[in-house]
Amino acid sequence: MRQTSVILCVAFVLVTACTITTPTTTPPTGSTPTTINRTETLPTEADQRFAQQREQMVVKTIKNRGITDEDVLEAMEAVPRHKFVPEEQQPQAYGDYPLPIGFGQTISQPYIVAMMTELLELEEGDQVLEIGTGSGYQAAVLAELPEVEVYTIEVIPELAERAKETLDRLGYAHVHCKQGDGYYGWPEHAPFDGIIVTAAPDHVPQPLREQLAVGGRMVIPIGPRGGYQTLWKFVKQPDGEMKAYNKGGVAFVPFTGRGIRGEEEGGGWPP
Ligand code: SAH
Image (cartoon, rainbow, N blue to C red; front, side, top):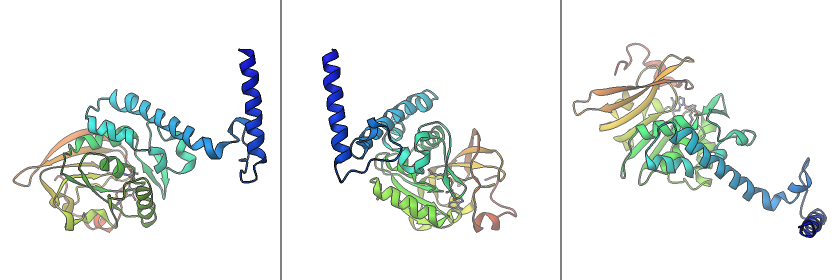
């Protein structure tokens, strides 16, 4: 046993020494000896660690809290959330809380992402519109659902651009991204079987209501700016009425843009 340890130690020292003296390898600053070979080994170790954390997250914070849709659970396990947050936030990527993504915006907590995705009840062949691309994470989760076509709109140009890059890089290039005010929806591709709004307006934007297919589901937080809101699920009836289901209290960043301000007087609430 002791002999084996000695051999392993010698091997480690040799590997370390080789790595340090290899001209192409730059030792990272502040590293400990065990991470010296980081350029080759860390990405794999990190990926494995993140994958384990993701697996735990799905069981502890999503499955155990009542999400049962297998497609949603698989999607949550498939999407590398850490790759959608700024590098300094990556160690926290699998905790059940929102994280900052810049420009005063946040990526929602994983449980809420899973719950809203489940509430959409998407099926193969459906198309879904997301308002508030942010980091692109929720769009990627939707894109993991089998045969679902995803459209997403972000109002902040820098976030829209960054999300598009992230989605392309991670294999979600088929997600349709647009920069603009999501208040007006995406009429060219309507009707949508699902509409998910990930910023909080104080009423349902009329264009979104119109762009929802009959039988379609809209999941949207509604409430006062900067306060707590109520998460609503609406199902559009054949006569155009929206059947409403209260899904509890949530806290989302405000829905911005000109559209929502223009409808302040006599807007679409109650729907
Ligand atoms: N779904 C995102 C997080 C949403 S944060 C994710 O998975 O990362 C809410 C986002 O909605 C912010 O990026 C904000 O800029 C955006 N937003 C707010 N009002 C909007 C509007 N009118 N149209 C489109 N996007 C909007």
